Length: 312
Image 1 (tube, helix red, strand yellow):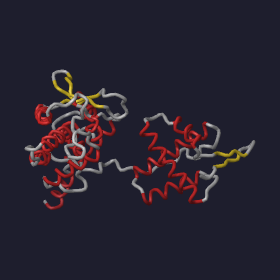
Image 2 (cartoon, rainbow, N blue to C red):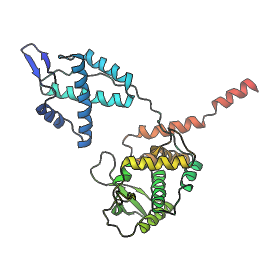
Image 3 (cartoon, rainbow, N blue to C red):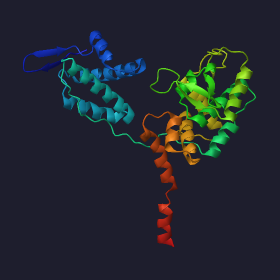
Image 4 (cartoon, rainbow, N blue to C red):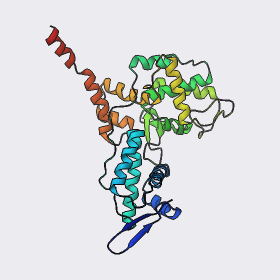
């Protein structure tokens, strides 16, 4: 990889920006999980490839702006944000190390649309989805229990895949599933299991027979990997297949739609924003407010009132 160089008033500094030693110090600078660090590393390598492809040895603020525009032409706004976040962190580090000035300071990323990219299911659609699942097979019992859990709690697919049998424990006067929330190190947060959901999970576990407490709550039942933990891709595939079977075939209906469904139906049923925030384990209430604003817009009858004025 090419060198990055910078001239200051005293000397010409040379930064081997992407060698192994630098990367070790760079990753130590990032206070995040291993998975997040790996993501930032992949992103900063893309920036390194960009510099190399353009023959840029001494990157400037303008180079980063040009990089941003090139990203916008081919990447989604969320991806652009991630790539630029890695660049900004990288140059924060180079400046702190005295290796290169922070040329990325105050550079803005792509503008993100706050609307959800996936649709929620209405109460009738959610009921239809679950009703069409064949519960006579072991896989069917699993899918019904799993999708019922996701639709009533809003759990992410990653939480579903990490759930163990032993994670079902009491919480007050109800049974709950404890899970590792986003940004948490332990399974310290939980969602309560509504009675129909708990019954569906118990029916599935009974059909599986004896399993260890640390066994995955939802397992694969394919011949090649029976009993193994499902992947997030598998959970997404299962959800999509059943959505299609229920006649809900759209790119905007996916496994993540069940999370939106839980939030939306909860608010429609009279829950507060704070209750919904707690249910979804949102860190920022502004994220939860997106659901509230969408519902308020749906209730807005402005168009109907205007039409009455015009057409009588």
